[in-house]
Image (cartoon, rainbow, N blue to C red; front, side, top):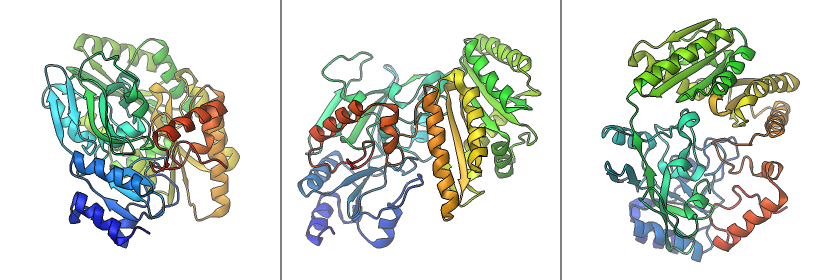
Length: 462
């Protein structure tokens, strides 16, 4: 229990209106979007300045208070679930776009900036910030960097880490650490920026982030390819990549997901299709048109039953909005939704799709599969009811089997959702005992009192 005197010190730092501990508010910050048990913190703190943020971190360390940093809480790995009676620092009080530099194509932002708002702000200046997690309408840049978020455009443009040029953060003692630069090249000192991206609040607390911007694509073309079998659709994904075509997005949806999305969004999706691909190309007009023609020919040669090319921006936006609603659509069907994130080399997409089907049948569970197939990142989504112990046990076996299949194919446990609480027990399967030991040493050196988001990424020793 955090003492009234200590609560008073936090209120002095951030203001009475930015520190609260009533039961209703504490429950709001007890969970995130992962299927893990909620944990009620002891205090919520909302700094609105660099100085207050650093002092709040220092005060937590001096008093041995577990500290969890939270943006919008949309992450899917339990990364922002706090510890009992710990402190949650929410970053939505630090939401300024400090600078958009058009000449040198970078932006400087505070961690609480909403991803979609930054994307719109830079697009208004003819620039482009490509990372686009599915939760971009509410997720924050700080959270994106902490989780190394991906999104639909990862195939062509990469993920969040590919756009972080530098950042400043507070270490556990409240010292401001700066890393990286506004320059295109920077080889000064250790690559602390690289270490902090994907660190999930376990090594420090972000203060400002420098992001690379690129020119806005001048032309795009979107199409929907419909297939009468999962195999044909997944094999087409591999064929497109093998033919050295790199779309901006290349998305896969199975029939179960298509029907759920259509019921939810009424976007005109073909509910009788076994699977479909959504493809978008962007760039120079001539290149886009040439690649679009090649993709159409490939889809037809691989057995596409039909191909529909978006005739205008409105049709394109309607279909992509429906795709982004896939998670919401599936979530309405059962009390519990487990969205997984197994990722394999792109050539193994057909094998992974087939494996998911076999696993679903083996454990008698319902799985809707969709995802960023072009970069190997599938989201097998298990629909269940955690209140049913027998069914939940089958779901846990299903998750184990999905991870094992991905790793056997040379894949990874997570393409974009992070490790958090949900996957830390699997980490050694993908890496090694030496990796876990090395990571623990880094954590111990940077956070000797183990107050920074304890238990995330690296599981506590048994």
